[in-house]
Length: 98
Image (cartoon, rainbow, N blue to C red):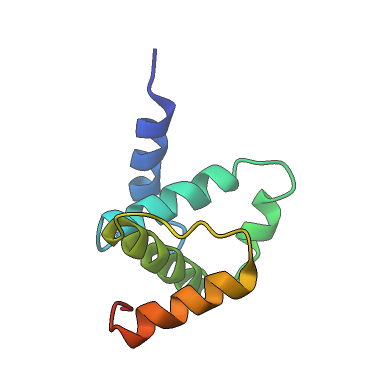
């Protein structure tokens, strides 16, 4: 049986959403997720209609989030927006923000 997640990660390389070879693992993951989303009814046509420069921005933004998540020992999980923003500010003040 085929490993669908492995296949989707490979398709993120073959069919990158922004039309460029992914620069790193995070960009390939972002492209794989966007490829998978493009296979969903109603989303595909919307994703295809996005301009190339905006596509690049979407991939780069998602890749940056993925990179940051891979750096953290634990992901932020707070039930309150104000607490989340306070913790984000603490990280920034400590120089833990990239």
